[in-house]
Length: 304
Image (cartoon, rainbow, N blue to C red; front, side):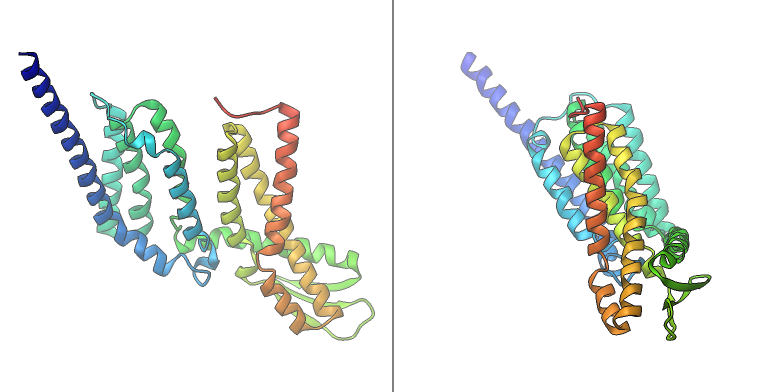
């Protein structure tokens, strides 16, 4: 009798495991068929430096970081699911499906992609315990950095960045003995006492939006790896914005100095080469300093 019961339990466990694996495969196939075309479109039309001022050129690298974060928690994904479903998970899953459907019908590629976040969170809450949800919540939310905003939204963010950069550069150049006349986003410059004038147009590519989005993603990634709390991470992300603006201004000023004192061709080559290097170095150094100050001042450590 015991042998029979043991055999029945073994068969039951095998059937349960088979159903579990089958369900995972089914969900994976549904997600692939629903979202692979969307992200393929992103890769072709939005994840290049030629589109949206290059704001999402970092997306392929970000995908690798997300894969790395999920791989670190792969053991949790292979654990058995919950015996009961949670209403919160069902709500998130339903919300994501509705947003995806509406995005498909209206042709809103942003909604098509962003719907993946509530869908994945909903599936996690539905079938995994709270500790697993906490462990995988950040990789899912990190998707926000690869889902491109509409062009109008990028332009709305780019314009104030260009305005700030132009005003700051125009204000700082006289300190360096560079005469400057500002007309909107156009700067007419020459060295003090020199006759030759040079006209510099502050195009949207000079806004620093590309570096800003990438560095916001990078700062949030590293604070997550450090296990810092919410306020620590939020502070670093907020500080990233003025640091990027500062780095961008220094990049433009260096190019102007080369235009005036060396040659426009040399300045153009430098500007293209330093398109992101100067901004990245200055911002990363600034973030390191701010992070050190926060840790020492408030003695912050890994969030529990």
